[in-house]
Image (tube, rainbow, N blue to C red; front, side, top):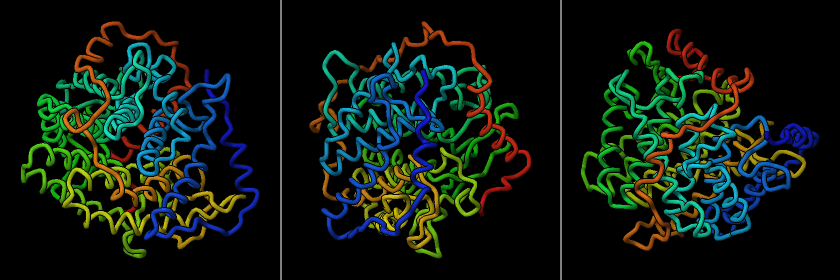
Length: 452
């Protein structure tokens, strides 16, 4: 069952009128930051209907894909962590539990036929965050947050593919999906991120070793360069001999937190160098016209960001803030960027009939750009609530007060009995296939739509 399409109706309402109001944000007042975050979170959750009778918990309406719903609930875990406001906890727990699938590994039958490794990982990272910040545990007879992250890790470790490109994960899980032959940076980066965080939480060296292996592969195959710029991915039918050089905010962010966590675990200077390099490398995503304000450089200026890409800044903001807790020496490198971006994002939240609907382009000095949606709200929420990072404790572990129960064998046998999915229809292929076509054109013909 698919959720009803309420996004169009909401859009018509939002566009019907606009009052210039914007969110009043005083970055020196934590009460002001919490109030702003609450306003933005209310706008974001207004798109979600999965808690209603007859709808599907965890699903967003069209045009949003399943992975972005997982990302949104990760933002709501963060929202509770930062503000203490628990009004969204029930729908968050309901969604994160409903979508686990019969094997408790975030492979639900309603998504399996089009699910990619990165899609699965965004749900796993939401569960990992829940474990790290001591989000209230599910009932004891339900899958626990830590065990869910471990299940996804185990599944994906078994998907490591040496048949091409000397290793790495494919974008898609199943051969019948468009994009199966693409090894993209975000899928591999999410695995790196989860492995490092599991290593810190559990003190299990296996996770740390896998994180090292993944970093070495990404570096070796050329998905990053000496300036710590991370590129989109590569086609394994040409053995990853050419790389799509488009840069996205979330690729930098996912590796930043992973590298900082590895430094926290090992104390090794190489990870400090790498973390600092990634932070410096994110300068490409911060405007020089409006200093320190985040922008999605590949698509924002030319207006080509799709629904997915409008959410990407949320994850860079999320992981930059988290980096300051596991690598405190990064604080003064990161917080000026988050502070300036939060101020600009709050000003951009000046659209719609309520006067506080958030747009995408934070560099417009408060002039709403007419864009709206889950991604725009989530990006603004994450960057604004990140200003509360100094007021909260860092991630816990099994040794420092963690309350989530794990299962190191979770997911190990999930694919011994593969799920049966309905036959794939043409419409199911459109989402993955469209982006795949774009990235392959970019590899073969150059990233013509990327802003340098």
